Image (cartoon, rainbow, N blue to C red; front, side):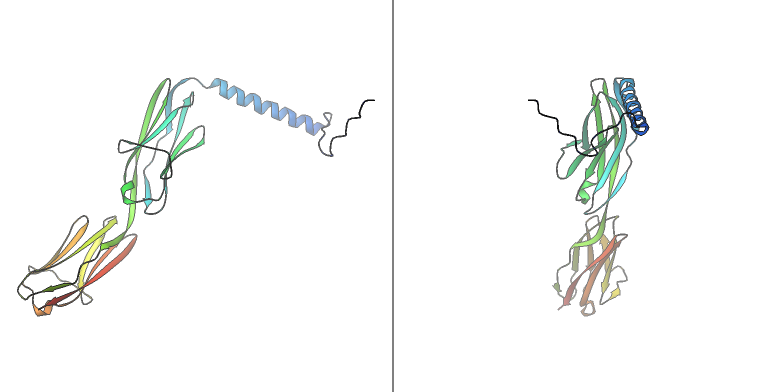
Amino acid sequence: MSKAKAAPPPGCTLNISDPHVQEAAIRIQASYRGHRSRKELREKGPPKILQELKDVVLVEGSAAKLECRVSAFPDPFIVWYKDGKELKDGPKYRYVFEDPDFVALVVRDGVLADLGKYTVTIKNPFGQTSGSACILVEVPAKVSKGPNNVKGKRGTTVVLKAEISGEPPPDVAWLKDGDDIEEDDRVFFDVGDTNTILTIKNAKSSDAGKYEVFVENSLGTDQSFARVDVL
């Protein structure tokens, strides 16, 4: 005795005589034919960059993304470089393929050391091409290491030194007891790439007090204090 077939669940049958079903089938077939035609029309050849990489700004602690639009068939092999050194896909640098035409590199947890020139090479059996752009890093102004308290004798030279950082490079000021220091031949300060030095020649009793180094750029400010005693 043959077993009767179970009826399909409600909603799982199609009536091919239904005009809406027929229209949907026609659209699916047309879409498939178009997709197949586009794939077949792709010519084999060396990769081409259709949209160049652009410079991007990376704020310290955040992420940045470099991307370009490419044309390549067969599918290419992608490698990213920073200042000529190959970057491995991993937690810091992430290779991204958003769709067949776009390739990207995401740089995470931005630091000043990420500043540089980035290059992507795109290669397949028919040739290769490359493109480059820069990541510009912005870092809030910071006093990385403040000046130490100093005790000096009258008539000697007293020096206060602070380590600073920031991108764009910060503006620097020194203050004594809350007032800006007016530089002259005896009291003056220098600003380098990573430090600033306040020099007090022929120290006097009036030079004793609370000194402050203040740094500022477009992303923030910072300061540090030290005490100078003249004996």
